[in-house]
Amino acid sequence: MKRILLSLFSIATAAAFAQLPVSTSLENRNVVLEEFTGINCTYCPDGHKLANQMAAANPGDVFIINIHTGSYATPSGGDPDYRTPWGSAIANQSGLAGYPSGTINRQQFASQGWTSGTATAMSRGYWASAGGVVRAATSYANMAMQADLDVATRQLTIDVEVHYTSAGPALNRLNVALLQNEILGPQISGSTYNPTMVNEDGLYRHQHMLRDLVTGQWGDDITTTTAGTTVSRQYVYTVPADVNGVPVDLGQIELVAFITEANQHIETGTSGPINNIFQYTTNATLYGVNAPEEICGGKASPEITVINQGSDNITSFDVNYTVDGTPLTYSWTGSIAPLATENIQLPEFTFAGLSTTVDFEVVNVNGSTDQYATDNTFSGVQFNNTDDETSGSSTLQLRQDAYGSETTWEFLDENGIVIASGGPYANLGAAGTQLHTYTIDYPITGCFEFKIYDSYGDGINAGYGSGNVMLRNGSNAIIWVFNGIFSSQYSKYHVVNSVGVEENLGFDYRVFPNPTSDATQIELSVAQQSDVSIEVRDARGAVVYASNEAQTPGTHAYRVDLSKYNDGIYMLNVTVNGKTATERISLIH
Image (spheres, rainbow, N blue to C red):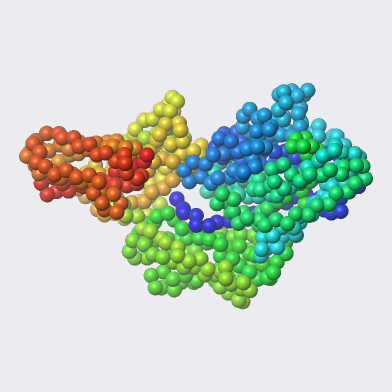
């Protein structure tokens, strides 16, 4: 699993544009499809596919706005938040009854049976037919739009014109929406229902995602709507660096404008070209570094993200960085177009110790000095070795969720050789779970990686049974524990110091439940009169529980109440007659 410090992704897209001046000839209506969607919606990728097919079949006549809203758009775990402040109100007035739903021009199609009552939202199977009805009708107004983008300041100057070929209603409202394409992120069932939009790494390529409404929730009033009138509006808008922490890539934004009658009925819509204005010809920006969340053996191969914010293509540069006092340089060649982004994997390097901090700098852009070098560095990137260790064999305890058929896992050594694997499993009813236990024998010492996969993309703890994974050593102490919240895959490292059998401690114990939400119990079995010490410490080393007493032969129980403490990992030390076993207790309220 990677920790994405900052990242942008760009892939070139094509669009049909209506450029100023606006046409004064009679034209048919254009389609504006507002699609209500979410990353946890099973059939939403099929909606995306159908919408894109409709737009591709009618270039310049169909415009898509994907609105992430509702419970299916609510992020969990480390998922990104694609919602905006505007989506709920638009969805609420549509009368939608499920996801994915969409409105075609916020129009009712009750007579055709495609919408119900006063609702405008309809199932994805009706979108193309409803769009055909709209496109066959003449429009009382034409629209055109264009914009200038100052790349350095991120300022958009948007010009929109509306010409009334016949009289409109007393009030129209002009809306301008900022969208973004090629946003890489999670999407449940993307591989099943829209596989062409899924990358090799499992990330889904989200398109036409609503990022902001330039003109506010319901638009800008137009009150002069008589035949022959041309209305011109200009909006100056600064594109945000991110929305809810999701970067807004200037190379992937698009604009859609449309006019409504009050807050409903969209008469027509358009898009328009964005003219990029550059202050520099050569300007590489080192935007971010993708650093692994943890590594093993001091080996790291980070990925850097470089954006071209100059008007010339970038064809070469050097990356300078220093690891443990040793200066390193990587020379890159290729081609990055203006406003495009390149993700570049650096060669593997090694470091000593548990962690190291690395600063990165891009120099010699196109063989010369970058004209704006203040954004060429990215400092303080930390690389951490795992501190999870074991000796001898270990025990994997995997608790599946109700959809076991989606779950598989494997252990790999440093060379990527699989030494153990398992799954898929049988499906269970409702929110059922089932524990699977495996003994993992290591053929060699060194670094090992555990990988777990979920073919559906919602992990094993998404509300259909609380799955989790735990690895214990030969003394039954926890090496690591994972709560099962992920999307398509998750990985965890640990170090094996020897392949021999661990020392016989002369006592047995178990800790349950672990993980726990409040209290856990320790059951300790001793074969003889023993001096027993039980101690639990928090991450700072403070003692939160302690017991010291002599125990008779047999099994003894200790209850540790952690309900008043913060979530995290607590260290348990069990000492019997001078021999100590260490266990990690995971507290998750």
